[in-house]
Image (cartoon, rainbow, N blue to C red; front, side, top):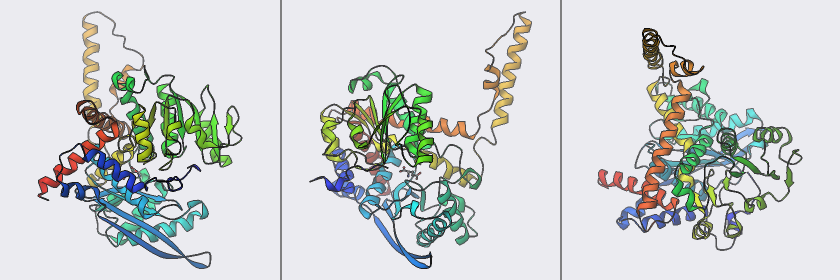
Length: 483
Ligand code: GLU
């Protein structure tokens, strides 16, 4: 999170929800939807507001929370729960809508939902947060706003595995005979029904999205870049769960150079590339990036959004690229790891200028994709790979044995690379399967978006293309239901 100019303080900027709706409208304008259906898809179905009291520090403290359901064309509906003091109805509704479009784009069979609690988690101790979370979960679960077949929350800003474990346990206590209780929430710790690879999933998805983009030279050329990811200069805004993993993977596995990191207390700039892990450690111990050695510190962090780089990755909050700074953004490629980091007005300025934006509904869909795998795992009551792994190894062993006896019969020495046997013989474990499923999902979704981007003369950008893909799938599902 950073202290950037909030959307509201910039004149004539629509709210976050209006911004998402305007992006939807841009896609709807090039589609053939009946006006009634268009309206049905765009509107948020319902938002539940709860105000509840918890006795803490000798008095009753009142908290305000929301759970918004945008679309129930598929159930359960899905989306995270955010803890932040700035949470409000407009924001959860915008985020719920984005969940609808995101799930449709990556073919996760869910409608869209989102929740939020107006709280700064840093103000409370762990046991206090547990009491607050359990009470919030109780309020939502008793209205089926947490339910394995109706509404399945997940982590978002300010929440993580710990909160999801409390929610799962709270639901299980209230539904003692529900055999699928664990599937009421995703993003749980692995020892409480979670899945390997969920914590890194959104950042991993960002990496797979960027990799897929760079596989298409024609697309890379559209933003004026060339070549692969190796050596590309990246600036990441927000080193939370998503930004941290994306920066780590892109720098360590793809050779990209993270030259800038923007955090709440300022930014770091280092042309030779930052050690992302070291920066993250520094933040953990010092509460911010200030004082980090081997990098230039810039007190006005938001200014670094406008710095020269190849790839800008906003991975914090919504509205950080707005009418006030869009014209000064130099990055030719922006990857929206956060939800809604670019306002609709800023989006127009950037796309008209030729900046390519890999949009949030695609770029950060890795989280919900792996949530989908976790939900399926919970409903199946079995870990992925448990049935096949050894059988796969046995079949591979057969081939290796055959090759060895063949080379013996031919009097030739078969000498594969040292780690070939170990790599080839090993059956896939859950983490490998999750990564494979996520990679496949990201590639397939990009393909669908790309087809619209290149094939429809009226669509100029990847965001509109993404919306067109999603909205046409949602429309099909409403049409086949007879709505
Ligand atoms: N909060 C994440 C998002 O915005 C994950 C949602 C989920 O896994 O359901 O996509």
